[in-house]
Length: 353
Image (tube, rainbow, N blue to C red; front, side, top):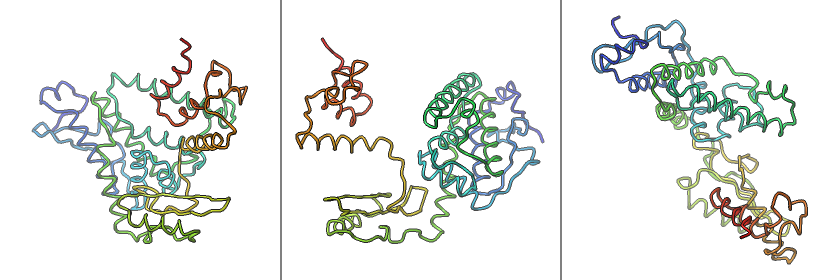
């Protein structure tokens, strides 16, 4: 078959081949093979391709020696893994891993997300590759240090720690393809955003399966006892708002030590149709800061604290590293601020002029 080798840069330039468009077309072809066909070539290295000399310079795949056929359930799991990384949805990622048959630590969702996200990261050109690898290694060292402190592991244990205990063969071949596609873009010195290119194919597979499948939450609001009149009113309001405005939620409220609201509704994620239940777990990150700030306000209302007091007067060990000037009011602001506002509050607190 007549064509141009991908490593023949002079000929590619001579024939006016758009290398970025070429790699994007190859990536789309592989996304279709994986997510739509469920049958794909597992060896997309530069030597296995030619480029037609005539416009529009289509890629030609030469070797189907290493191929893989995957089941419908694995296609859906790979699509969910891809989309959960795109959305930063740790719950859906853990669900995708479970559907693949991965053995993993469910207590380390952030580390699992970091591992999966590496495979879908934007490609870099050959000239940027060294800096990219250096940055990844530095990030890996920071993660290892944080993990060592959290898990109380020694350096040797951290080195061998892996939140994913075992990858199934189908997932390994899939990740091999992604790495080779990244190498392809690096060899041609182009930058590709794989998430943007592959996403429509993954969405087609996953959303299509959700549409065809039975409803997992036909009632939308999870069937649980109504604890009070106010909870009944809340559920009526939620039904009025409908699933077009709410993806999923949990509401719990206590009054005088008794539960008056314990309602769950919707689904676990955009690509995870499982119903939200009262005991469903979500990564809430710093939401507890708001609860803590509310409790401090309550203590002020009870006369147990004053906003103008310094925190060190109440908690002496807090008054280190120039923090002795921070007042209760400033501390509450720090709990509820974004990064820019926090920096301004801190600099104001330390300004003694």
